[in-house]
Amino acid sequence: MARLLSWPPSTSWLYHELMKKIALIAHDKKKSELLAWVLANKAELSQHQLIATGTTGQLIAKESGLQVQLVESGPYGGDIQIGAEMVENKINALIFFWDPLEPQPHDPDVKALLRVSVLKNIPTASNRATADLLIHSQFFN
Image (cartoon, one colour):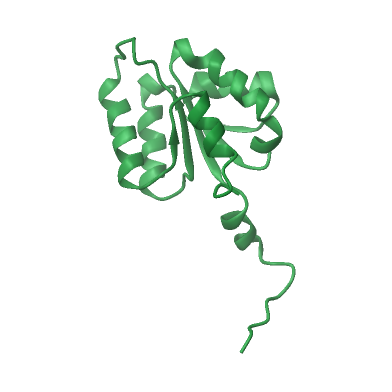
């Protein structure tokens, strides 16, 4: 027997099914690259909730006009804060443009963040090509 669904669907259904929470992080030498990607995908990103580490999030909000939830800067615990949200299943995707050529003072935090993204099966993009594949995937929306 077919089940009737009420229309419109509840707000919680809409949030969980359509609006994703996307974490945006970039190391210093990758910030301009992430910003260019955000600007190129502004229309799509505006349909989702964005969270970012301090400096990256401030730059994105200022240059794009998008609303961004800010946490601390990465070296001051921002990566850990986003990782904690991942553990609680509050992040749907991670866009993290990291710099493989520069040592980071908070490298253990970066490794922990990436470890949690794998353990929690969170789609993760580390450069423009993978970010494009992720956000334009038929499985994302």
